[in-house]
Structures are given as C-alpha cells and as structure tokens.
Amino acid sequence: MTDRQLECITAIADHKSLTGAARQLYISQSSLSQMLARTEKELGIPLFQRTNTAMIPTYAGDQYLKAAGEIAEIKENLVRSLKDMDHSERGRITIGIAPKRSSLFMPVVLATYMKRFPEVEIIFVEEDQRLLEDLLLRGKVDVIFITHPDLRKELEYRFLYQEYVLLVLPRSHPMNTVLRGMEKIDLRCMKDVPFILVRRGHDIRRICDRIFTDSYFVPNMCLESHSMDVCFHMAAYGVGATMLPDTFIKGHPFRDRVACYYTGAPYSRQVAIAYRKKMYLSFVMKEFLSIAAEQITSTYCGGENAFEEQGGIC
Image (cartoon, rainbow, N blue to C red; front, side, top):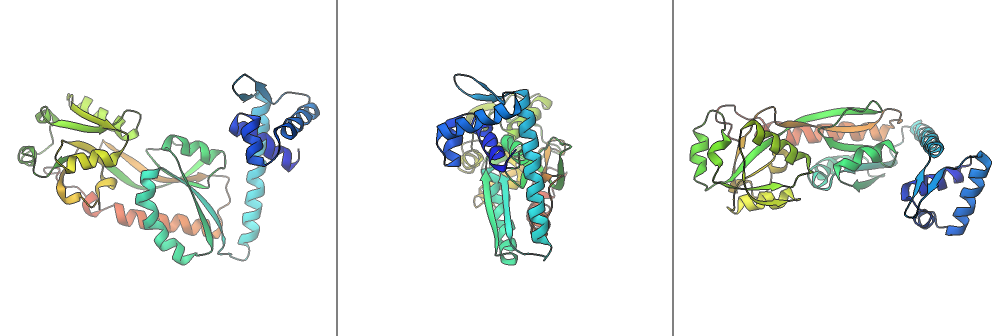
C-alpha cells in the first residue's frame, strides 16, 4: 500500500464517488478509476460496492480504510513528535466546533492563545455537533468542542463546566411577578404564554421537551426555529418566552431586555473538549487545551451561571 493509494481510497470513501474524489485529488476520473482497479487486483478483493448513486465500502474496504486511518495517525504523530523535540512553537491545530459555539468560545480562547503562539496555524471546521465526533474519529480535526457527549472509548475528554437551560421571558412580561414569587418554577402557570423554541433535532430542544414532560406542561407554541438567536431576539422584543442555555445568554447584548429563571440541575449538559486518545499531543496542542479550558471556564462558569436556588432567578 503506497501513500498515494491510501490517499485515493480514503478520498473515494469520503466522497462516495470517483468524481468528487478526483476533483479533491486534482487528477482525472479515469486515472483514479484505473488506480482503484489496480489496487483491487493487487489485493484480490473489491474495496467498494458500486451502485447507481454511490460507491459504498465493502467489508474489506472498511478494513482497508481503518488501517489507512491508523497509518495516517502514526505518521502524523511521528511528525508532531519530531517537531516537538525542539519545543517548537509552530504547528497547525484543526478545531471542530458548532457554528454558534464557535462565536462564543473562539474569540475568548484565541485572543489569548494567538498572542502566545502567533506562528501556529488555526483552522476551523464548523459543523453541526452530530458530525463533530465522526470528523474527530476520522482524523479530519484534531480537537472538538462538544456538549452532552456520549463517552467514546477512543476519545479523551476534558470537562469544562455544566451548562444549564434557562426559561427566558421579556423583562416587562407580567408573568415575571408570578415567577419571582415561586420557590421552584412551575411551568403550568405559563399555559397562556406563547413559546418560541428551537426545532426538534437540536440537543437543547430534547432537554426542553424533557422539562415539559416532567412538568406536565404543554407549551403554547408560537414559533420554532433552527436558530437560538431568533428565539432569544423574539423573547427580547416581547413576542413570548423561550428556553436557552445559559452560555448563550451570558454577555448577550440584549441580556438586559429579558428575565431568566433556573429550571433545575437535572436539566443541564456537560461542555467538554475531546481529542483522540492515540493522538500525540504536541507542545502547542497541550498549551491550546490548557488555555482553552482556563479561558472558557473563567468566562462561562460562575458569576451569572452560579444560580440561586431560592426563586431560581438569575
């Protein structure tokens, strides 16, 4: 197996087609097809099942790709360890992060990190959280920021802080008088208040639906959106109530337009940094992890995130 064969087979699997892979590799489709045919002939077994719409790895193809990933990891770790021998302050870090969290975390982290390591190249891969673990396991990114992670034995985690879900109302809403008088928030008093929520499929909506079920409450739905920004701004402009993570609300420029209420410790999720256990941690990577943990926890843990149980108001 040559490096070029490994690269080509991996590209075909990533794109599920010769056309997309050839475009990525800057070679003709016919050349790539011939290379694949030669490789399969050498191995004596097909690596892909051809369909009308896609090229799907066979069992042998899956094993080949797994080995290709391990070989690439070994080579990358070797390069990083050799560069690290002189305590190099150069390198590249590829970060996987959800777009909204990127706008919250990356300015806080990189303002400090890039002053300390100006020669480190930083690359963002901004994707939906559901794709981040897959990208990390495939070696497409070095580190990811993730919430509510399902612990994987292949990954190492650094847990940063607990993120809570808040009930958010317009500050001028008359229900604030009722809610401030409660020792524990009872959502059933909100039956006539319109709700704006993120759509199903988002992790935060899953937590919201759990809160509603546990509270024996059916929200009066006004609007659903894929954007937390839309939900927050609707509440800030007096349209209705919403439920959002405290990380998003802290420091928001419209924070003074809303009143927020703690919904309870069970309705929270862990915020973590994850990376592959087999990955060599270079000096600049170790420093990135350390600075990221310090800056994020100091910004988003404590202060407004330290809620009072009495009344649950923050």
